[in-house]
Image (cartoon, rainbow, N blue to C red; front, side, top):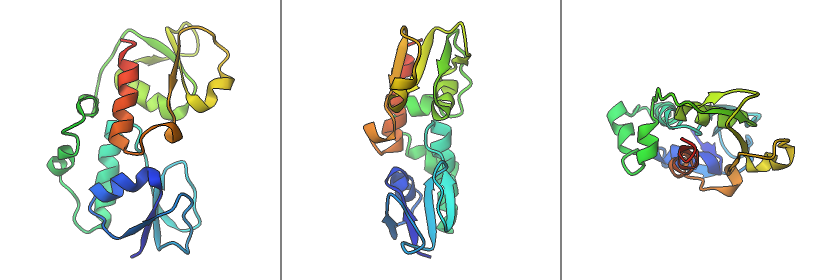
Length: 172
């Protein structure tokens, strides 16, 4: 089977043990038999859609992609990938609760904010959290927290999550 993946998913593909693949920002059936891409992406071919915004999503994505190889990685094998990322380990399957309420301007950020344990509300919030690409849509003017989006941050999902968790931890 010929696999094609997007740049944002390439690290997951590598960690899952797939060695023979192509990278294309906009995969189509001419590139391969199956695409591995972010869940927001749509293609006209067989695909496996994954999420890589939170530690748990990264963990589950590695597991799902590894199934394609015929050798599903064990929990212990996957946890090894988290060794150098303390915040990713901290928030893996987290149940934190903090007395911080935030308004969030993006669905992908809601997952990350929930991991850190913030309450998501529409009014009476402590902070407004938004991705950089929605800066012009933010109507509030105080307590703003801008989070880098996919294009303004490392493509490595661990580094990306680690950086975003770090920003959010400053609000605790």
